[in-house]
Length: 112
Image (cartoon, rainbow, N blue to C red; front, side, top):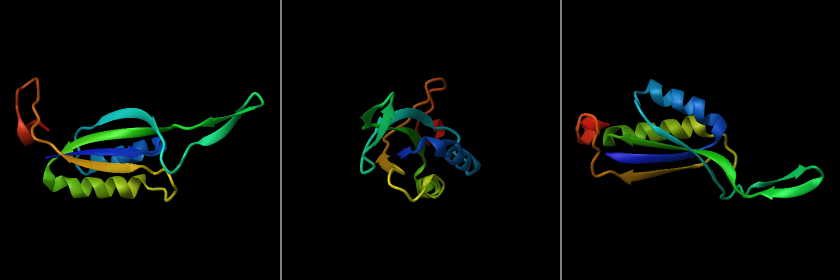
C-alpha cells in the first residue's frame, strides 16, 4: 500500500475528485493548505497599499491505495490537475505499513 499526497490548485479539486471517483477511488482526505515554491506568491493592492502574499492557497489530497492502483491514480491527478503554469503542485508517494478500520477492526487492504 502507498500514501499519495497531492498538492493541487483549489479550482482543480472538483475535476480531480470526479476523475478519481470514476476510476474507483472510494475515499480521500482533503485539507486546505497554504504554501509557496517557485510560484513565490504575488502582490496585491488593498485600500491603496501594496502588500505581498507569500503563501498561496492550495488543496492537499491524501489517498491510501493498493500498489496496483498508484500509477493510475498519479497519472490521473497529473492529467486532470495540470494547467502547464508554475504552481500546479506536487505529488508525494510514501509506503504505508498498515491500515486499520476502527469500526470493524479490519486491517491491510481490506481496510482501505
